Every structure is written in structure tokens, then in C-alpha cells.
Length: 68
Image 1 (cartoon, rainbow, N blue to C red):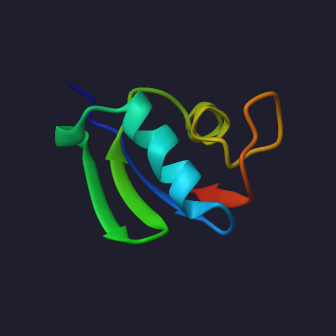
Image 2 (cartoon, helix red, strand yellow; image 1 turned 45 degrees about the vertical axis):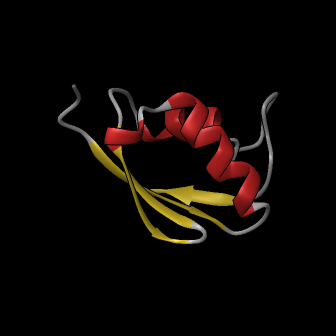
């Protein structure tokens, strides 16, 4: 279990980003805030999480967003 907690906000393609997050992180470590926002526990950096969630440009890009 991670001690790191991040907020992910999807500015585009929120449903697809949400599905990606659910495929990466266990349900017990995801806390939905809104239809396009989630608090998640994740062991890694904001950059790694943004890339894996698909909100940062790269190979797995889905749509614009931010991870804090």
C-alpha cells in the first residue's frame, strides 16, 4: 500500500481516463470526487501516474488532464 495520495483531473475524455485508472489501481485505493476527478493512492511520481492514466502526452495518451 502506498502513502502517496494524488488528485487526477481529466479535462477531456474523463470516462476513458476513469476506466484507465480503474485498470491500474485497485478499487480500495481510488476515491472518486466528481465525474472527472479522483483521489488515488499510488506508489510513484506524478509524472509516472499522469503517463499511465493517459493525461500526459505520450504513447498511452487519452486526453488532457492534470495530476497533483
